[in-house]
Image (cartoon, rainbow, N blue to C red):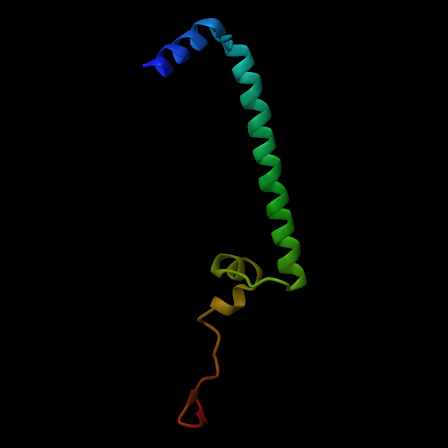
Length: 86
């Protein structure tokens, strides 16, 4: 019981919290969105550099974009079937 009254007294002493205006919120949101966008751009740039240098393995989409000849079914390919090339 004593803890509850202490908690209530603390809240009463703090008073109302300052409210955030719409202008402040929109300013914060713009800054946050810009930071997220910059972070994504940096990660994308780093990934592209790593792919170009060959330090990371490409996923299917990246492989298709960088080496589309791999997915070209119109070109003849060499396959092994019982030791002979078809």
